[in-house]
Image 1: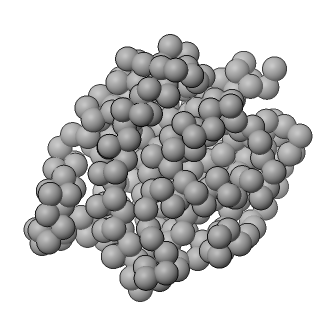
Image 2: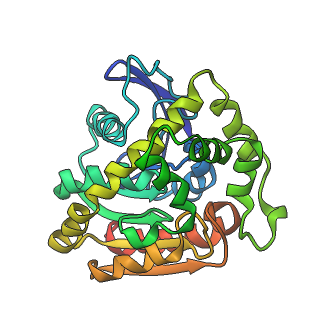
Length: 288
């Protein structure tokens, strides 16, 4: 099934999204991480579009979506969740599964906990809802939360999305980095180099503390609603380590759990294996 590339006005912001598959089939909404875009799902969309309807948006300031000035748009995870919720409403998508990766997790958990009745299943790939999943990588971010004027912390955070930082995110802990296309970080860098984008990334690092404050409410959502959940995690991710994946076992009974010998962007090195597991999971849980 061909992938279509569309834009739509959501609350005054032009949002880019990829769409593929028959709308009569179950919908899977793919929420990307930092510092990438819906581009990270390009291969998964092709793999699944014969059986499923897929939607993959870019958040404001990411990928091909509009980047409104910071004095006109507040870059927060709350606002990203509102954008995605409104997008799904405009597309008249009432039931769906969510694929949550990195920043996609706090966006998606807001959406799922606000409307549990709309959720068919959750697929979590290196995204966190437990404080034990915030290990050493998060130390400079936590320092930034304590003092937004901490220049040492700020400089460290800026380094996460320069050329070397982007390459590191894609290749760290990957057994064979030669299988990772350099196009990934080159494409990300093009969007991140837009004027004011660096400040946007810092604003979102700072706002991430508000996600941590919501962790207990998301954990309560897991306990109360017991969503069908699939974990497909890069086991050796330094950003969101497997301790965060293990933590879901405390609250989610309907959990299928898979770890892969790779890093943060697990789809880049283990896309075939992960898409096969997702296909099987959705076929049993949703496509009945």
